[in-house]
Image 1 (cartoon, one colour):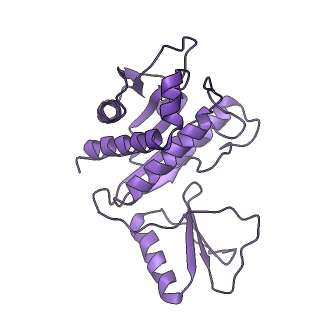
Image 2 (tube, rainbow, N blue to C red):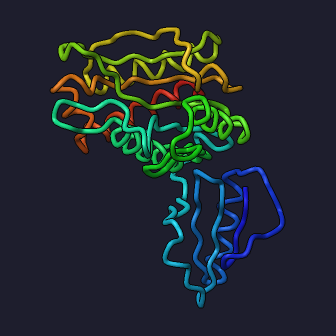
Length: 258
């Protein structure tokens, strides 16, 4: 984690954790300074009362006070699939998979953080992770690197499914064969199917790059089919996204037995 005060980097590099973030927030509050956390890049920005950030500086999120400590000490990496120049699948009415993935992931981050979890995002806005026009393995490798370098306890990649037949429907969670990953996938799958009321397409083995090369138990969730008109509406709606995020959060908690 990097710490930047009034635009100047502090010459330290510390592993991100919740206790440190809250300590920095407490210090800033005492000094009447502002503090923001860029989770995607693991950067804490601290601003003195007189400092005005440049207009092109990205907006980053408040550090939230946890409502519980159920996930304290846990580090979860969330990967909103696609983004930037890669829209992912496109629904019949024109909705974009990358937007649905990001919206669900941001809601999930909030739910995990208020339970004390440290959350690492591979992206928290509509951007390419490696960079524009990257090769597929470069883009996917950049996501894997974020999770591995953060030493995350688990990795969850969020996607929408798609098929040429618009009648295809349901939820699938993929793993790469590790027992712990199968356990994680099973909890998330059951929770999402129950909450969204989607067809249970089961937990399955998958050789997706992001779950094959991450060093921790990793899963890839296909929440529902964006190519199905009814499920497209579910994925694009505020209610559907909220329910999807809540169900994944509950699955993660069951995996950690908290």
